[in-house]
Image 1 (cartoon, rainbow over the protein chains, first blue to last red):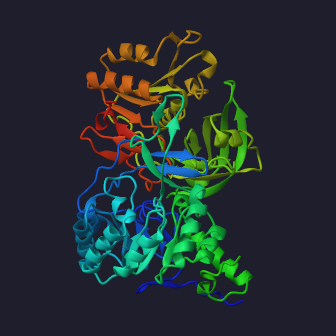
Image 2 (cartoon, each protein chain N blue to C red; image 1 turned 180 degrees about the vertical axis):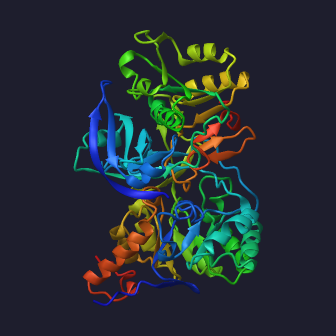
Length: 304
Length: 264
């Protein structure tokens, strides 16, 4: 049997499999390197990197909910200098593309981090995190087409590398924002970021998260994510990296059928850090079993 | 090396304490490398829980390749584990934890291990390691529980030379009162001492404060909720005195008491 082609292109970036890691669910690659052959990933999407170090939110930061995980980490990270000095060397030891997730409080912040990392050759693509629900201003960009476009435009001037706009589902309709990001020069879209939510402890009558609200991930949000991917795929002409509750290869295939060109796996990494590799293998098996020779042949082919 | 292991279950002993079990499994690499204070994360196919659950290593024997955890019925994962028997497999990742208990290196040092409830298993493992390294080591385990039958995890320790000082809230065994009652008396003696503690947050705070006030070194295991245990989720934040946070799993779980913010 011929091995089906799994490689996909996200702008000028070639991923040898259509599976990457969700930002914030895979650290900077080194933490679980004992458990994962990193070169078998389509790309490593690393934890968010900001202009300056961020302390993050006080605990409690995470709560498990039915079929889901509610988090409010608050973008704890060492900042761009720390990324360049301490994180990138490890990642570059492996033959695997690196996608750096970049949040910011204004378009200049985004562009600054993108330029610094781009000039250092320390990434192969950027995921613009215009939709983090757990920090002030994080969501603002992804709830308004004009703001989203401003961030993409500023970053477009700062790098030649592919830009992936990560969009929020916490809006009435994601399509105008997706379209605005595309028109501003985004090479791809990541969707969906987490769904905003909260959890309350009836016994103590308190919020479970110190931040009160958090972003919900995990299987609980998969139907929401599939819906938005499917709808946006019909609106934009750039590739979509689909994400939201993918636990196994079947889930990943569903996203491809809905119109995603690639997928990211997040929460499942906390349970099995090798999930992205196993899901890639599972996609290959699905394609072979169903007579497809190329993963691209199933993208967006869902029918009634 | 951190490994995911589908470990064959060897034994599942039900303890006298209601709902308490010791699960022993074969995991040679883990058994050879796990240090006291380190833990594993377990996935049980319950359909009801998404994340793995952490369990401190209770014993690890490099000679036999066997390791064990001591747990009580708490939620779906532990209820599933309670049913495991010879022939089943335990889906674990480990050993996890970036820092384990470090023995006080001073000659003649007294090691006071203070535990309560869930905190006793890693201390019992540490006590065995201390004695294995030096059969004359001065090791005292002060363990507290509500009542006699809930004192778990100390079986066999007195036989190898560990001095046991049980404490019960109801006076049914040992000292009638809290572990700090016994600890305070011991800390007033002029012996070079290090305190090692693991247990409920309020107990550890009281123990750490008592040690710090007397300038006695104190190592604490921070049993914060660990969503992944591997350093990738940033969920198990432990506050430091300077207002920043570190990960309980990889920067800990064992910390010097002075490294931690005890406010709140």
